[in-house]
Each structure stands twice: as structure tokens, then as C-alpha cells.
Length: 513
Ligand SMILES: C[S@@+](CC[C@H](N)C(=O)[O-])C[C@H]1O[C@@H](n2cnc3c(N)ncnc32)[C@H](O)[C@@H]1O
Image 1 (cartoon, rainbow, N blue to C red):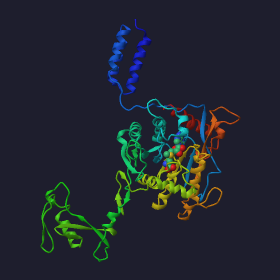
Image 2: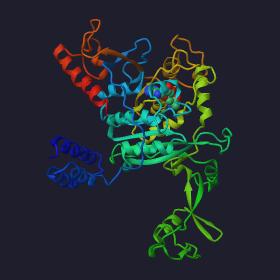
Image 3: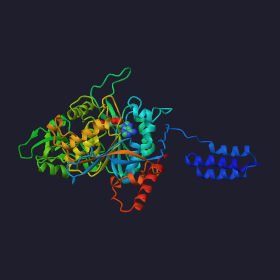
Image 4: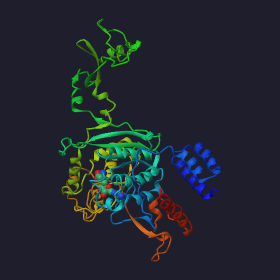
């Protein structure tokens, strides 16, 4: 007689296939019934095999779980690095440390509240740096990038609001894989666009392949409830130059635009136009762009331009609703990589202090696509470009974007005290206040920019033993609830409840996802 445990094991295997969505629940029910009735093990195995005709194929990468730890990681304010310019103005955050525990901690206050995320992760293999290598041992099939990103994207998704957007810069080599990963986490339905940014115009000559001078920026939404803010790029010089005609009637300069319809001729727009002098303008092959009455109104308002045998309409510069052209997926109008290094040079008065910063204008373009009052997050903040981008955009469009940046204190040859201490904090201090931490202001950037203002809270990630008094400290003593948007608790009971709810649940249950 077949042992009950063997039957249950076979049924358990099939049940897992249902969870993995490779076996239909109805087929499972039937197979379960048959296995329960089977007389021999061979018979039960044969029945179970009927449920294994499908194999999952497609996009695979090795998922490396974050290490479980017996400590609780929490935010601790660094008062020396935090600064205020005006308490009443906005407070932004820089969190120094690994972004995994940092994102977990952010969930306490910002779950479902972040509007726009921009990330620029290290592009794997060639640029993961020592930090990533030691933390994420090389996965079997590819390098670490996907296994490192995957658990972080799951947390990022929880932080995003239902209308939220996430942008991710990525290079040529990784674009396809990272897009596959985003499809997995955010679903293909929520993919919006893949922008191509021209990062340099000449580029280094690559051996055995062509020069790479572009990078990608993926854009996904959390749900289909997103809206994209209409964003414009400056008109090309040749388009601006087209606004050169002037009738000296006070309306200013204009360009002329064709009135011929490019496709889909319709009965209403297929006619010969007779102008006010009686001249007949034969119908173009695909008709006119508007009905007869509209063209007549334009003529009566002196807005028609008669050129040879074509009829055009005047487009006045002063009447343009937007000075530019709506952006598309080709971003070749933005500053290139080299300009980002120059921006940093003006702030630090030293060359090549940080590898691969992004131009502020590139991240401004991403933030500009989101709402003006957004909470924006960059959890691979590097030199802190995203913080500067949010503030510059606020200053130019009156927005109230609040930024949260996360950057680990990775040590490099150029940054012996770590990137966060040597670069990120110092950059933000200089551009926000106009002076360095030591009170001096002898850097070039401030000569042609006003300080961007606002206040910065700098947090670090500290650890405490999990609910056991270690050296007299418990999580209830060391975790400061006011750093999580909560008023100070008046009773220890409330504090204990809050810590248990938010830290045990957030940090332990989410780990392992
Ligand atoms: C390509 S850079 C970002 C550059 C940034 N966009 C800028 O304009 O300066 C990626 C940064 O992520 C940091 N990083 C890598 N892994 C991290 C982690 N797990 N947590 C926090 N930061 C990390 C690296 O130190 C590096 O500075």
C-alpha cells in the first residue's frame, strides 16, 4: 500500500507548480484526486507526471536573498553633517549606507508615498566596484547586477504611490536584461518608454565594435493610474531660425507651416480654396489640414502666407504656448557626460573626483515628467546629482519636490573617507548653502549660481541587537521615532508597540521576499 506521506509529497510538488503558475488549478484538483486513489507508488508517480508537462522557460537570473541578520538596522541622525538654511523651508534627506536596509526603513514612513524614483545603479561587471562584489558574490549565469537590483526593486515598488513613476539609467550591455527584470517586478503592462540619451558625441573608440555614445533610461509606472507631465525640449537652432519673417504689424516674427494634409483625406477637407482676391488654390493631393471656413478665417486675420503655388499658415513665435517641442524618446538635446564632470569640478575645484556622474539636466528631465510636488527618491545617489536636480527644478518652476537620496560610503582611491562623506554630503552642502562645512566658499560654482537653499537631514544606518538588551541598549532605547515622521511617544508602551509593528514586521518579513 502506498504510504500517505509519499502521496502528500507528490501533491505538495504539484501544488508548488500551481503557485509558480505552470499548472492550472483545475488540473491540479483532478490530479490530486487521482493520486489519492492510486494503489501503487509507480501509479501515483505516473499520475503526478501528467502535471509536469509544462516547464517554465524564459527570463532567468539568480536571485540572491539579502543576508538575514539578528540585528535591527535603523536611522540615526548625523547632526554634524545635517544643516539648515531656514527651518521653515523644505527638509530633504540623505541616508548614508546600503540602500537595502535604507529602503526597508523608508517603508515605515513612505510606503506608497513616493512619486518619482530615479536610479542609476552601477552597471555591473565592469563597474560594480569592490563594495558590490563583496556583498553579492557572483551569480552563476550573469554578473551581480540583476540579483543585487531585484530585492531593491521590490522594496522600491512598495514605496511608490499608485500614480508613481520609476526611471532607471542603464547602459547598452545591460539594457535588455534590466528591462526584463523591470518587466518581472513592475509587469510589462506598466512599461512606458525606453529613452535613448546621447551621452557623448565622439566617444572612446572600442576595440572590435563600434563607438558607444548612447545610454538608456527606462520608464515604468507602478500602476496604470499615472500621468505624465508634458515636458518640452528647446527647439533646434534650425527650427528657431525659421521664425525669421516679420510683417511689422506688431505680431512679431513668424515661421510658416504647410496647410497640406499629410494623410487620410476627408470629404470636408478636400476642396479647391478660393482666396479673397478670387484666386483658386487647387486641392493638395491629400486635402487641406482644415475645413474651408477655418482657412477663410485665417486669411481674414492676415494669417495666411501665399508662397508660389502653395498656401501656408503663419506661426508666430510670441503665440507659441511652449517655447520648445514636446520631448520624444530621443534625448540628444541634453548635456553630455563630460559636462557632468565639469559641473562637479566647479563645486570641488578638483578634477575626476567621482566616476560617471550624470548631468543635472538629465535627472531634471526625468523629474520634470513627474508632478511638481513630488517626493523624489534616488537610491544610488552617487555624487548627489538628483538632489541638486530637484532643487534647481523647484527654483525654476516653483515646484516643491522633496528629495530623499541614499548612498553608501563606498571607499575608492579618490575618496578615502568614502563617497558619501567625501562627495555627496559636501556637494549638497555647497550647492544648498553656498559654503563648505568649514565655512569657506572658495569654489567656482557659487560665483555664477545662487545657493539653492532648503535644509538637509543626514541619516546613517546603525544596528542594534534584535530585542535583546546588548550593552544595556534595546531597540526601544535607540530608535528615534521622530526620524520616521512620528511625534515622540509619551508612553513606553506605545513606543514598544510602534517598534514591534514597524521594525520586526518591516525588516524581518520583507527580508526573504
Ligand atoms: C553610477 S553611480 C550613481 C551616479 C549618480 N547618478 C550621479 O550622478 O552622481 C552608482 C552609485 O551607487 C552606489 N551604490 C552601489 N551599491 C549601493 C548600495 N547597495 N547602496 C547604496 N549605494 C550603492 C555606488 O557607490 C555609486 O556611487
